[in-house]
Length: 334
Ligand code: G3H
Ligand code: 13P
Ligand code: ZN
Image (cartoon, helix red, strand yellow):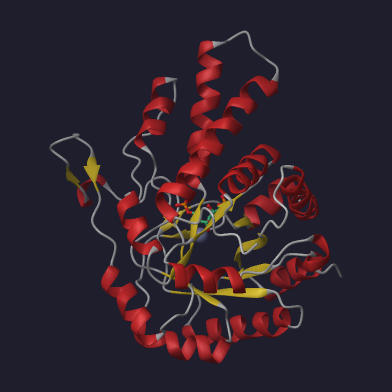
């Protein structure tokens, strides 16, 4: 049993309370490898932002949960080495799908876990989430629950259609489970293909597809039922068109990849939404940078020569999200 506090990590409680009060959101960036982790921590340190490093089930299978945990422990020391005296870094399990998985993360030193029972019948979701909360809270580990289903197809997160969160369920769910934050469904989805072109209209100025707006009325309904309760938005990548174009220019084939407009995320970040999950955008930044090197320098075969530029591109992206979209810069407690 390892307690996250001994690793220098923090849970989400304080940072969420400050984020709601201050009208900004904490970035939750997924990581699977060293370059992503370095880029996230460099960006968080340079902007003085709290940050959530999150690990999906797919990431655990890819990189090994123990290694990822030691990397997060290393991240705290890395941040300090870069001059951040009191970094606020959360190690979070993304989309935990069983009590056993959540327990194993708590026992290994994670400071926060998500139990995603959103696909289960309501009462089963309540019971599973309640059990995870009961276990995690013994160690002061915070728990994210979910109500409503996001559409999108990923390795471990898969649903054909979304179902918006029902505001009339949120008080019952949070009081019965005791969860610390609630992920909701208001029209975001996972991956780089969040909307079908036929759902969008064309912006005459840019010729780009503009997706339908998020269901802010559902978010308002949730906030009315649960004033001041921390809300989480999954599926919040914007799918920057410059990365899509760059990937296609250098031999990739991404067609009609569409994300959430940044203006909508800015609006969400100012509300009770205090955690915004971003994964796909960093995949796009990394892929675009690597493809560019492969095409422009075909003789290059030292991985540092393409993973280095990929790391720089991801850092640029993370800093942009923190400063220009979520507003979590300069928000460390000390
Ligand atoms: O929510 C999904 C995250 O983007 C993680 O995706 O399961 O492919 O690691 P993954
Ligand atoms: P994106 O696929 O939009 O980056 O969402 C990531 C996410 O929600 C991780 O839980
Ligand atoms: Zn998610």
